[in-house]
Amino acid sequence: MALKEASLQSFGSPTTFPTPTRSGSPIAALPEVASVLLADWLPAVAGLQDILQAGARVADVACGPGSSIIRMAEVFPKSQFFGYDLSVAAIEAARAAAQAAGVIERTYFQISSPADFPGWGYDLIGFLNGVLALPNPSNAAWRVQTSLSENGVWLIAEAPGSESQVRALANAAGFSTCRLALATATDAVYEVRR
Image (cartoon, one colour):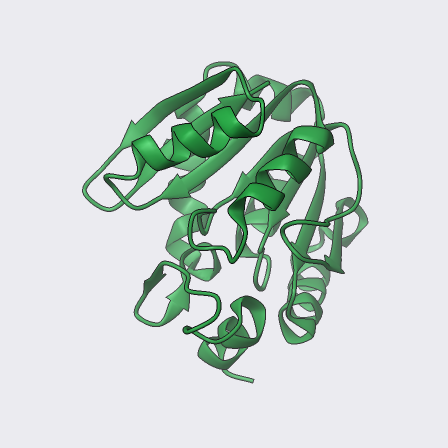
C-alpha cells in the first residue's frame, strides 16, 4: 500500500479528519521529520534528551509507519517506545520497519485513537502531526493529561500561528505550562507540562 493511501487510513478522509501534510503524507511519516525531531525539536526542550538517554517511556500518537519512533529507538537505546495509530496498514508497516531496523524489542505498535491510546507513566508523548486538526482535540488532551508521568512532556508540532489555540487547549485540559519551544517557517513545536 502506498504511503499516501496508508495516511488516509491512518488519519481518515480529509473531510472528516484533516491533518497537516507535506506532499500528501502525514508530517510525522516523512523521513526528514525524524531527523528534524532529533536535531531540533527534542533539543528545544531543556533536559529532554538526558531523560531519553537515561531511559524513558515514549508514546507517539498518530505514528503512521513509525519513522520517528524507530529513529528515536536507534538513538536512545535505554528508552521504550510506543506507537499508536488508527491504521492497520501503518501499524503493520511500523512493526516491519522496527524489525528491519533491529529495534523491535524496544518498540511497540498498536491500533488506537488519539483519545484512547493505552498506558500511563509516559515521560514524553508526541503529537508530531499536531492535535488541533483532530475531530476532538479536547478528548486527546485529556487523555494525554492522564497518561503523562509526573514530570512528563507533551510535545506538539503544529503549523506556525497556532500558539493561542494550543495554549487554550492545554489550559482547558488542566496543564500548567505551555511553551513555544521552537518556531520555524514550517513548524511550531510546543512543550506542554502538567
